[in-house]
Structures are given as structure tokens and as C-alpha cells.
Length: 109
Image (cartoon, rainbow, N blue to C red):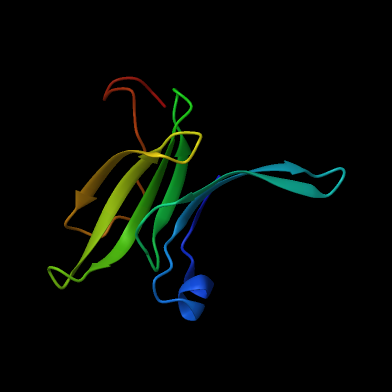
């Protein structure tokens, strides 16, 4: 799993977005297969993370987004299902290095 900022794509297309990706890597045969390539609908030039959730969904943190409406930097934690459809989207008014979901505050990850 990885959070792809998309800096090279944005250099070529200012409307490009960051992506959440899941790859299956066969090291022995040197083959990588894309299992998920989700357009996250926002561009984060830095700061991001990826996590597979217990229910099979994926959470991606877009931690460095310029919000044109407010003129400030924000972050978003986005959850997509295995088909790449957005399940939830939480925005923070702060920059966020990484986010991870936990079952509760008492159970070790």
C-alpha cells in the first residue's frame, strides 16, 4: 500500500490528484500488479500514509493540502473501499504527518 502524492503528474497537469494505491508484488518473477488505484480527489504535495482496515477498506492520509477557499493548509483522512469508492472523508485544519485508525484506545494495534 502507498500514498502517491502525484508531484510528477501535477507538474504536467495542474488538475491532477493524489492517489491511494495497493500493489501485489511477486518478487521472484519481478512482476507488480495494481490492485487499487484510487483517485483521492485532492492533491497533497507532501505528508501521507496508507493503511488497510480490518473490514477490507483502505485509509489514506493526505496531510498537506492547500485549501483555496480558506487560503490555508489542511489535511484529509480518506477511506475508500476495495473498488476505490470513497467511504468517508475527514478534514483537519492542521497539517498531519500520518493517520491510522485504531479499534479503540485500549487495544494494542
